[in-house]
Amino acid sequence: MRRREFLRVSAAGSSLVALDGLIPNFLGRTAAQAPTAERPGARDTILVVVQLTGGNDGLNTVIPFNDPEYARARPTLRQTTYHRINDQLAFHTSMNGLHSLLQDNAVCVVQGVGYPNPSQSHFRSMDIWQAASTAAELNEGWIGKALRHIPAAASFHLANQNESAPLALTGAPARVPSIGTLDDFQLRLQAANAADRRNQRQLLDTVSAPLAPMGRGVGGEGPNLLDFVQRTAVQTYASSRRLQEIGRNYQPRFPYPQSALANHLRLAAQLIDAGLGARLFYVTHDGFDTHAGQAGPHANLLRDLSDSINAFFRDLSARGHRDRVLIMTFSEFGRRARENGSRGTDHGSGAPMILVGGRVKSGVIGAHPSLTDLDNGNLRHHTDFRQVYAAILDRWLGVPSRQVLGQEFRPTDVLRG
Image (spheres, rainbow, N blue to C red):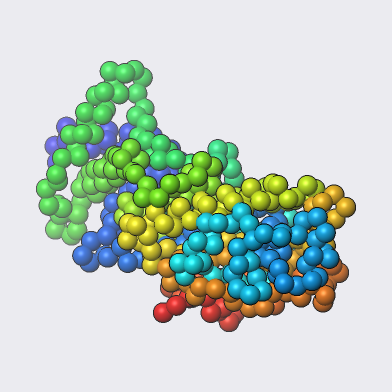
């Protein structure tokens, strides 16, 4: 390659480094991994984890409306209107969206989930759930470790500005980027003035023209370095432009609520439908530490959660991804059975997890925890959360759960086929 060609390619490559954070790494990988006849990425499964931060009150999320102890434990917080799941249990009255998906056989409620000797500390308990371990020191997350077994998969933390990446993603073979909108993929050209930036843009447009077949290195042993640099630049630039185009043109097939959670799930839908190999997403939904005046705020949180997931799943289902997507909700702990004197609830333990997808076993798995056989006022768990993780790892992501969880856990029967 002539010197001028080398400078053109080098300039293009250096300009691309100006993309935010580690986004160029993702774009470069996905350009090479986009679905083809040999790599049918459209059949890859997708996991979306929704973290309910603060300790969701499971007893008012999945309600044992026929249990007289429920009314006694919740004199002001009990729900007298609700959406029936079966003859014993119901969703909170604000959870219209999830109830609609239940009727569409796309919701699985796993009852009484927790872990032995539960911690009442937000930080410690959240670390346990995110690391999938009760060890004293926790440095790696279960999703980060899972990603080592599927290194070609792109993953994202869908985050608000300045939101820290969760421990769950630590330990991945490449850092998982935190993004809030598709604008985060915008190419930022580093130049002193507008004229120079125009020149850089023209240069990138030029090198993005169709490439000749990959050259051979010295002695004919594989592609040479300049071929690699040029192709990386071209793929990254093309992927960046494609994502921006998707952001401008994406029209949801189902209306999303106006909320941060819904916006993040809409972004996930855009990335999934782009066919770039994105398979794991992590998003947080904050505000569940409801010690006082719980009724109104908790109803709003559940409504946002329910409506956002409903919109996301129906949007993707309409685009042909119904059986590819699995959404999993969790919280670091539940709340105590009895409400407190401030018309709120305090830190508890056993609580439900909710899974949404086209291949879940719809309905309720496991008995509702007893409201008379309590552990120091807390609901007892009967299903270790790592059993749910094991099902997702082994049967959904195709990752050996033992290598991620550190020991064998019997997978909960939450998936069909």
